Image (cartoon, rainbow, N blue to C red; front, side, top):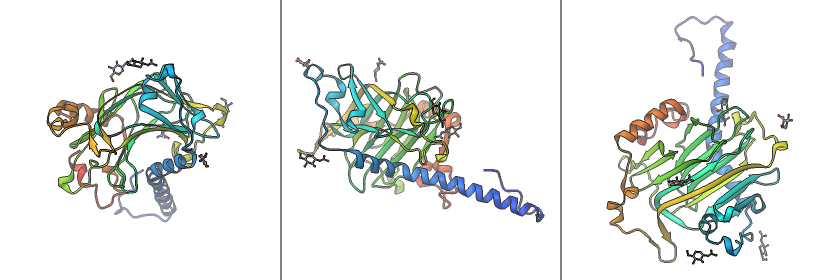
Length: 329
Ligand SMILES: *[C@@H]1O[C@H](CO)[C@@H](O)[C@H](O)[C@H]1NC(C)=O
Ligand SMILES: *[C@@H]1O[C@H](CO)[C@@H](O)[C@H](O)[C@H]1NC(C)=O
Ligand SMILES: *[C@@H]1O[C@H](CO)[C@@H](O)[C@H](O)[C@H]1NC(C)=O
Ligand SMILES: *[C@@H]1O[C@H](CO)[C@@H](O)[C@H](O)[C@H]1NC(C)=O
Ligand SMILES: *[C@@H]1O[C@H](CO)[C@@H](O)[C@H](O)[C@H]1NC(C)=O
């Protein structure tokens, strides 16, 4: 936003309509930003509920039963648009004008680290959104998001990250990547333990969200979450504030997944217990770690070079100042 000139300068009457225009445009642009961040989660939920059909389940062929995507995930919605290939080691989601698609983990986890290699929709992916996130159920849900907002050819994907604790989000940070995420598979990871949440791209930490409960900020730690991923159309608002629409002559749009790995505490609803013991939280690195100084320095460098939005510095949305957690992250 262009800075408004020094208010002590005398304003000529010619300048007034010009100033008005700037203020109007600024408000318009920022309003859309807010709209986007608030819409992203709700819109996704609506789409997924409308399209999901509980009667559709993936029936693996017997010889494929041992493949990772058969064992660990189910196609949750948009079945014909999603395929499990290569004996269960490759999964593709696609989006056509009729429907998008999505999958989810069979198991629920309460802390751990997940890694997935993803190749995003190539070419003109404007209007599409690929998501990869952890979420619990219910109104007061917890959620940790990676969302990839497509763009027109030659323009960068936006990597959107967010955290919800007890139903409240509004903690967005966005990044451009330092490579083309559509040319090859790259590894996107989420680490979640009682102390910290870390987002990694190719093992480089891009964001850390530390537990700030001592500052009065809720932290996701009591609700088990599932892994979800989906590909859907959001051209009403996603790309360049909705100005660039999905070009359906290019459909189907396809995103691919492979080499999933997980090191987590799985939650059983039946026994209401975790696969991890209390002592695991003092011995296993994944369950007790925060970024060390070196990794934090690396993350800060990535943020300096590649972050394009940070809710902690958004005075327009948070005129009373950023949340207390911004001080420690
Ligand atoms: C699922 O199957 C049941 C029983 O066949 C049927 O009554 C129900 O309408 C189906 N639901 C959907 C969403 O297709
Ligand atoms: C799946 O793996 C188990 C254990 O490794 C093996 O005994 C079984 O034969 C495999 N099943 C198929 C269908 O390959
Ligand atoms: C798409 O590219 C434009 C131009 O580089 C950029 O302003 C925008 O943030 C990018 N991402 C989205 C989702 O529009
Ligand atoms: C959509 O894609 C087709 C095929 O590349 C192209 O011919 C057409 O101009 C595109 N439409 C728009 C609105 O960009
Ligand atoms: C699969 O992931 C593991 C760990 O996440 C990594 O060590 C391995 O190199 C990956 N395999 C391929 C083919 O990229």
